[in-house]
Image 1 (spheres, one colour):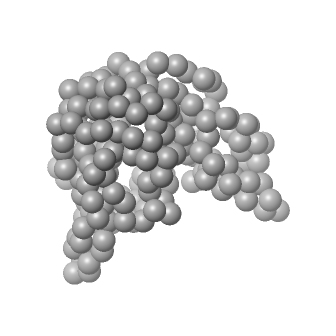
Image 2 (cartoon, one colour):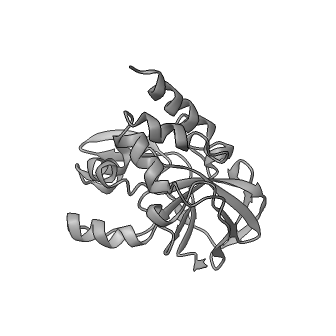
Image 3 (cartoon, helix red, strand yellow):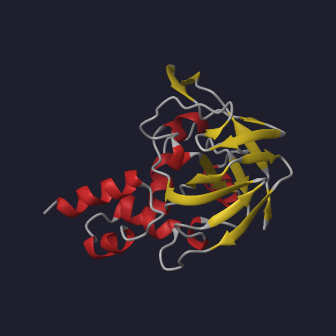
Length: 212
C-alpha cells in the first residue's frame, strides 16, 4: 500500500519552450477529490488523443522515486506532476509492477495495461533537452491503468495492490521491448499473450512481428 503523493488533473494549454509555443495537457493541478470514470478523471483532458486518454489509458501514473534521480542528474528541481501524471506515489516502480496488476485507488479499482511511450513534451515542459532520451534509455516512463470499477479518489487515498495476475513480465520489461528491443520477437510473443495488455500495444507489437 502507498499513500498518494499527488492527485492531479489538467486541460490542454499553451506553453513556451525556446521561443516556440506548443499545446499540451501535461501541466496538471493538484486536486483534493476527483471522480474517476471508465474514461478517466472527470475534468482531465488530453491534447493528443493518439497517445493519451481513452479507457485503457484512463490513469497516468509516475513513480515518485524517479524524481530524486532526475533532479540529481539534471540539476533541476522537479515537483509532481512534472510528467503530467494523474497519480504519483512511491513503492510501485516499473520494475516491480506487472502488466495486469490490479489496484484499489480510493473507491475505484484500476488495472495496469501498458507502459508509457514518452514524447518530446517531457523535455519541453521541464526545459531539459535530453530528458526524453534519458527516459527512453532508462524506461522510467511511468505507466497507464484502465478503470475496472469507477469511484471517488481523494488526495489522501491509498494505492493498494489487490491482485497480481502474473509476475514474469513487469511494466519495465514490456516498455523495454516497446522502446528499445522490438527485434526480440520471442519475448514479444510472450508479452502479447497477456490478457491485460492494451490493444494499442498488442497492435504495435504485432507490426513489429511482421517486420523481417
